[in-house]
Image 1 (cartoon, rainbow, N blue to C red):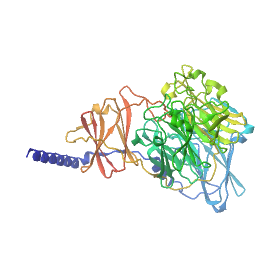
Image 2: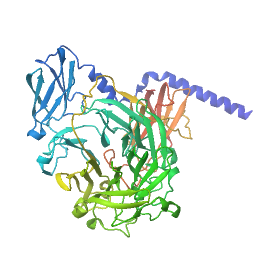
Image 3: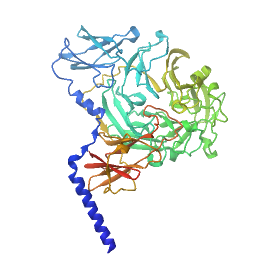
Image 4: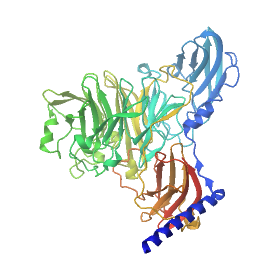
Length: 639
């Protein structure tokens, strides 16, 4: 009988709770909505055509999509098919940009490469007639990073720009051969900038899925900043992506359920963002060959992805095992490993190459690629030049370099055939990030992107972990072993690319889309009874809690001590879900980009919780449990 009465009492309490929720609706406010960039841009784009515009009186929109300030869009109509040409006048011949567009009657001409804080002159030509248009731009942000040194042999250079993405402070930006800024984005888009076959660029999204830098996925946009697609991924995105010939993307991602990170590759169909193939390094390699940076969760730390059609294989770079590995695309089986075989089991040694002549191994490398002739090029960061710091070289005596290895996969021999950077010593030493790109035969772009100093001394750890006070990036373009361009930027940059502003006339009107999702957010095993709760008070407000609803998830942030026990509760009468907030600041050994992270405050650590909309539908009322107190937030969210 007692059990029966307890059951009835619980039913009664649940009913009273439901009635209370029902009758407090008028007091409850909706969670603040944060519009996605795509939503904002779709609304903006609807205003572009607001009248009739002609060659003589075109419409000019500066920064049309609100995130690319040194671009503009010119719109006008002609009665017949015409082929317009634009000239964006530079400060000299090699920084002047011209583009001829395809024939059309309705002309949307993207204008790239404007100078900041400048009255830019654009000459528009149609059917032999010329019209001069002036576009005045705004100043750069106060915290914009400008070059501290430029070396340019202009007779060997073109008007291509040098694109960089920040690892510490800065903006995704492009510089011309004079060091002038000609393009940048105002959002925290991260990782490398890739030029796709359709002319658009691909870059990491500006939203996190997990700390310290795993983004929700990838953004496909043009240089105007118009976003065509956001590809959301269950395991997020980090470091690198490769476009296959069929348009699919090989993405460095994670399988968080494994309990490890940066050891998982997915291939996605770009039209649907469905995963069609996965490669799990936990199933391909033993967790061996570790250096001092390897941790239980980040044991491999893959930082590059490259597909080679000639061998139908994928090349990956494991920073924390000092190894570049190559796997079979069809079955994921291991083909070979480049690096020192120290700390690897003997049954794996057969996959390593035997060095001939004077081969120097790479350490904690980045940006591994297979060249058209089958050679391997990479950026050798050179950390310690050993598996351990105890046996290593101190930073002041160390160096980084670009290096090319010739591989004989039949005899399993390796030969070093080219390098650059060793002779520059510690001034070129970057213990993390960095890049090397093949531009053409004997033509390379190299970025030593993570140089940092503390109290005047070169550092051996990534700048965010070393608390460095002086940062530098050195970009070098080499043609036939001659430095034809060099640029120093007083910050740390993740990667660099050399690209032309105009490829195809790829601008298209139409709404941007988010493809895919980030999966169902796991709930807590412990649910809380909501009968006893209190209103927000001063103690609650001390945690600086914010709650926002994004297009595809709920984002909660707050500042807490590591010992705090915190959870967010969603209740819609018939369904109650509890989600725990993890309060920790992990001791990362490789903080490759630091643009998303905030300093730990005196009153605690700022943490974020992301609750994806997958599996949620309807109206939910919000509560937050902090230690043993449940607060009624007087807010609701609709999924």
